[in-house]
Amino acid sequence: MLGTGGTIAGRAARAGDNLGYVAGQVEVSTLLGDVPLPSGVALSTEQLCNIDSKDMSHAHWLALARQCEQLLDDPWVVGIVIAHGTDTLEETAFFLSQVLNASKPVVLTCAMRPATSAAADGPQNLRDALTVVAADGARGVLVVCAGTIHRARQVRKVHTYRLDAFSSGEGGPAGFVEEGRVRLAESWPAVETPRLPVSQLATADRWPSVQIVTSHAGADALVVDALVQSGRVDGVVVATTGNGTVHENIEAALLRAQTAGVAVLRATRCTDGAVLSSGEQRWPHAFDLSPVKARIVLLLDLMRGREPAV
Ligand code: SIN
Image (cartoon, rainbow, N blue to C red; front, side, top):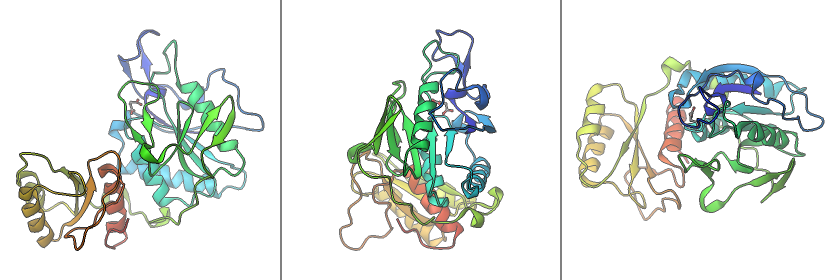
C-alpha cells in the first residue's frame, strides 16, 4: 500500500470537523486503524509523498509509476493499493493506466473525510480496495470509493462533499464491494498495452508542456496567443463545447498556434457522451476522455514523438 496523501491522510483539530482539516498529514501505515485485513492478505506500506493532491506534479507521477512498475514485477506482490487525494485521483489513475502493464490490480482509493473524523470513510475504502486487490482475476488500474469500483478511463470526481464522490458516467461502474465481497458489473478490464512504458518516460523536468484552454461564450484569443508567445508550450487541449466545437475566436488562435508548431487536441466539456466525428476535422479529438485525461494522452504522445491517437 502506497501513501501519497489526500483527505484520507488529513488531520483536523476536532473529530467533528470534516472541512477544516489539512490534507496529507497522517502516515499511510496508520490509516487502516483497527480495520481487519481481508483473509490471506499480508500488507506492507510505503509513504511516497504526503500531499494535498491538488499539488500533484509530474515528478510525483514519475516516482509513483516507477515504484508501481517495480512492485508489479515482484512475484510476491499480488497487487497495489494507492491512498490518494480525491481531487486529482482520476488523473493519476488514468496516467498509471497509460504507462503500466497492469496485469495485477493497481487500486487507487481515497476519502472525503479526514483520518481524524469521528465518522471517517477512509478505513472502509482502504479495506474495500484491499478486497479488490485480493479478488480472483483482478487486474488493471481501478478506483474504489464508497463501495464502488470504477475503471481509470471513465471515473470522474462529480461531487464536492458526498462520500460517494465519484461516477463512471453513462458506462456505469465496473462493480461493487459489499461486506468484503466483489460483485462485478462486467468482467475485469482487459490489460492494455501501455501508451508509453514507464521505462520510456523522460525525467520530469523534460516532460512536454501541455496546457488546457476552455472554449466558452464570450471567449477571445488572449490565452492561446499568450501561451504561444511564451514559447514554452508544446501542446494545447481545448475543452470544447458539445460535440467538439470551438468558439471562432479560439479557433483562429489555435490555427496560429498550430502554425507555430503547437499540437492541438479537442476534448468535450460535457460529462457524458463522446465527440462524434463528422467529416474532416482540423484537430483530432479525445473521444470520451475529459480534458484533464486528454491532456495526459497529448503529454505522453508528444513524449513518444507521435500524433495524439485516442
Ligand atoms: C486532496 O485531493 O488531496 C484533498 C481532497 C480530498 O482528498 O478529498
